Every structure is written in structure tokens, then in C-alpha cells.
Length: 296
Length: 305
Image 1 (cartoon, rainbow over the protein chains, first blue to last red):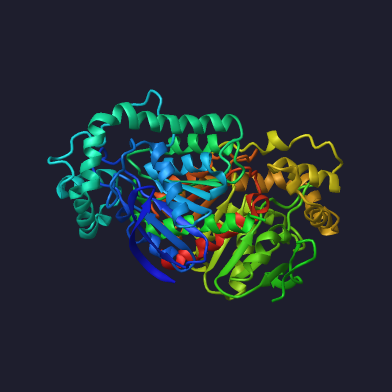
Image 2 (image 1 turned 180 degrees about the vertical axis):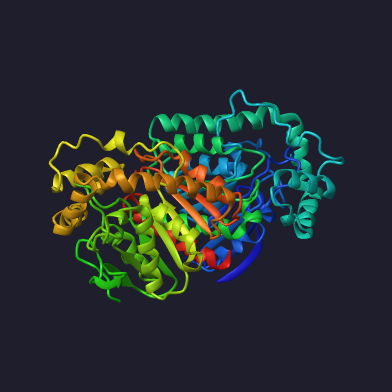
């Protein structure tokens, strides 16, 4: 077993920051962080996962990238969309010689996990979608006022602290190391470029790509379904998405995918892996283990 | 190791053991070492078409015995254990007293209770009334505990087969399950064994012919259910709890799992709720690999939560 180590790998021309470690020959778990780069008022990146992934190092090979537009990974020449992010992740797995992985996706990372499961089901052993308001249907919802008035300047340490607290039930996980990492990400080139890009392309390019990814899922649920064992992990007090949203997503996927499970973590907001890390580790590890044992 | 998997993958329970609990001969199975897990199955004495026994947990008991001390026992009047000694003990309260006395008699450290259906209700009552015996509670698909409308009567009425037959047992359990194929002949063998026991026929006579079901069991359970839900709302359940329901259970609405989660979780941080797809009333038999991973992981979690 090795501790998490940072490296930069070339993924189709994009220098990608990846943390990896654990048992090198064991099954791999891929952690995909959330937050829409340049839009969400806190900066996503591998740093968001906190201590939880370390619990997987003993029995698993752990991979945690900064997705393009976040943390230490500057986006390439391609437009940033759910599709290009999904393709980037697949290329990264190939660059790491990983045939298949268990995917754990938070927030936008959950939608990327669905994209991967729909596009490359053979390469996703299981999918855990963690507190992801992007995945359930959004038609004719309310305007979202949760993060409507962030303190300025945006993406400063103080502004991000505000956003993280607005999204959380338990505030104590918002510690100096998280805020330092978020603030550093906010000063980085990846974030700066993402802000520039999203200023002109969020409404016309990125948001439609999220709609497309969801529509692919609903279509699949009328046909062959999502061909990947899927667990939906929601939180009891997530101000960004409700249990009813989780049920709709669960029922849609469960209509075609036999191995679908739904789990609610108690006393948590949008970051169950930080707010209730022990419960989070248990539920993800149990699903991965159960799916592995069930596989002939 | 005194449990094994027979050729063909059948999980075989170890030899039965016997213990006297307040004058009632009580049958149980025990294996493995580690944190103690006690399984409490569902149903009640006096059902003529189906019958539960400790064997219903074999797909969980046998694999989990590799890591834990696992115990499955026959409740008062069910399986191979003796019937209630007095008519007025044909009640859930007597079942709970007997179960708690059995657990106490094992002289184990506080146990992880896993109760299914009526057994989920019993597990919660034990945790409420005898908290010193209990380390955690897992409630599996319990309509008895759920505040929602129970639909057993709708889903399982009109069995087309005569009572006390393999066919009636198979029909009832297939009605409970998502996949009829999950009701194996090996399961039905165990059901039929119990249905044939003379003492079991006595319990049916008592509950149905002598009307102990309507005179004692049902009204007492209704009273205890009101009290139990009130106690849950008050925060009296003070042990880590997970609630596991099946999405396709024809007898218990999934929403009931969330009702219980909110009642218990409001007072107890260590509360979880989990729903299995393509699972009826018996998720632990329909998806044993994933159920066992969930349960084993929960027991580990309780230690470091």
C-alpha cells in the first residue's frame, strides 16, 4: 500500500493533476469531484474529498484527478462540456492502463459517472452517485436561490467559505486545510481560464451539455437502461437537492438496472464524505464489495 | 468452523442447539467469532399457509459467520421452539420477552440485532426495553413497525392452495418476493418441516380456532405499535440504527422506511436508510451478497462511527 501521491500526466495533450495510491494491483476506485468549473462559487478539485479516500487505500487502488478547469488541471483547446470532460476521464483511465473502475462521483462528478456508464459500461464496474443535484430531472423547477448572493470578491477564501457553509449541514468540516486548498484553486490558472470560458459559454454550451447527459439517461431508462450497478447516496439535509429528487433518480435507474440501491446519510448536507466520513466510507465500500462478490 | 457451503452452493446451517428459556424449549444456531449478530425473523405463530424459522437467514448467517459471532434462533411459538405456555402469552409482548431472555441467556456482549418484518418490530422493542443487551439495530422491511398502511392482506390473500402444504408456502413467499425464482425448494423444505410439526398445528388451533389472534395478539400489538412509534418520536431508541427496505415489497411501502429514518434520525445521528432495487420483502435472500456487505460494513462502522 502507498500513500496518495501527486503527479501530472499527459491526457490527450491536457496536463492532468492526479492523486493516486493504495494497493496497486487491487480494483481501482475513481473519485470524481464536483462543482462546475468557473461557475459554482466554491472551487472543486481532488482536495474537496478530504480524508475519506484515504480509508480506501488499504484494499483499493485510488485515483483522484482534478478535472479540466479545476485545481491543477488547465482545460485544453476543446470546449468544456460534460462530453469532453467524460472523454477526458476515459482517456485518463487509458493513460493509467486502467481497464475498469468503480466510480464515485459527487455533484457534477455524479453526472460524469452516468455519462461514463452510458458511453462505456464495460469500463465502469459500479457507480456511486453522491449528492448530485445535476442528475435528477430539473424541469420547471424553482429558481435556485441557495447561492444567490455570494460575498465579493467571488472565489476569495471568504466567499468560498460562505458557499461551502450554505451547502453544508455540519459546518465543522470547513477547516483551514479545505479553505486553503479552495483559495489556492481560486488563484490558479485552471480556474481563471474556466471563469473566462464560462462567462461566454455556460448558458449556451455547458448547461445544454448537462441537459443532454440527463436526457441520454432518461432515454436509456426507456430502453436498455444504465448497464452499471448504481448506488445513489443522498444526504438527509442537503439544501441543494431533496430526497424526492433522489427517489425519482433511483426509480428511473432502477426500472432497468437490477443492482440499484438508494442510501441516505443522516445529519449531512451536500458533502456527506466530509460531514459524515465514516458513514460515507462504509456505504461506498459495502456497495463496491457487494458488486464485486456478485460478479461471476 | 462449524458451518459450510454444500456442493451446489447451498449455505448449510450448523447443528441446532437447545436452551430452556423460562420453561420454553428454544432452538438456536450459532457459529463464528467476533462481534455478535443476532437475527430475528418475521411472521408469527399460527399462520397456516406459511411458516418462518431460523433457517430463513442461512444465506446471511453462513457467510457472515466468517467474520462475526452469528446467532439465529426460533422465536416463541415459531420454527422448532416451544409454544407459549399460557393463552395470554400469544402476544408480541411475550415474543419480545422471550427473545430478550434468550439473548440475555447467551451472556454475550451487547449484540447487533437484525430484525425482519415482525422481527424488526421485536428488535426495536428489545432495544427500547433492554438497551443494555443491544449494540445496534438493523430493521429490515418491517410493516409492523412502519406507520404506513400495511398491504399484506391485499397482496397475499386468496391462496389457491390448501394450508399446511409446500404449495401454500411457495405461493405466499413468491408473493412476498420480487423474483419468484428466489423462493428456492430448499427454503420451502424448511417451511414445510415447520408446517408439519404437531406443536405448530397447536399454535394455529390456538390463534385461529380459539381466536387468540383476534382476542390477544392483534389488539395487544396495535397498542404496542402506537406506544413504540411514540417512543421513537421521543428519541428513546438510543442505539445506531439502519433501516433496509425493498423497493418492490408488495406489503410495505418504501416511504415507511423514510418515516422511520426521520423519527429515529432526528434524535440519533447514527441512523441510516437503504433501499434495494428488485427486492420484495426478503432483500436479504434476494440479494445476499450486497445485503451481507451492507450489514457487515454497518457492524464495522458502529465501532468507529
